[in-house]
Image 1: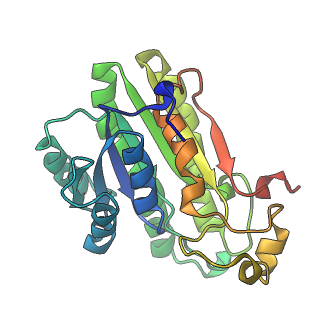
Image 2: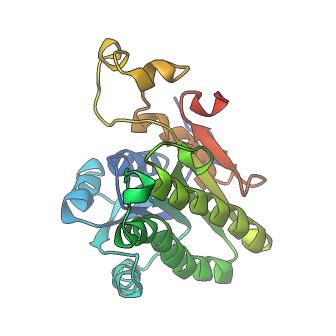
Length: 254
């Protein structure tokens, strides 16, 4: 299917920061297929290599990347120094901060709580602040925070993770208000239960949570790509501060 001109990311440069999950390579592919050049930031070399492989390694679509912990100021400095060597502006920032953690509330240690908030929320705060300052100077930017539907729902044993995702949603809305006048759009792409594996439908439907999902299957990262491209494109000019969910209908449940 041909890409409509208003959805093209040709000539745009994107920073993709991923802290957890297996969606990073597919999200990078979606950006590249729409014409963007992608710079990856990952917490491990394995995850960065997966993004590089998905984009064809040395192809023009892959600007390179950094292995860095951007929940620290030094990690952000490290990543942005490497990005600076690419000699391109940061038109797009995608934060994929969904490092999962499940534990009964009364068993969570303060250290575990802080680690979850650091990986998911502090990392997004620090990197977005750094990149956003440049976007404000340039008077252009698209920021997409990939988050879980638990930003707006509760889950037993999920308090620490859900709190971090609710923080991402609130940050998204606040930045949309602060930076709207600077021609920056800030939105959230909400996800439900997903898998990067191609699991047969009949196998998936043996699981209780899949049967609870209205569309009766898990999402695949490929499901997220078209919406991500829209939120990063010129077409997304009058949409900001919004969480848009691709969750198979999970959020429609009371």
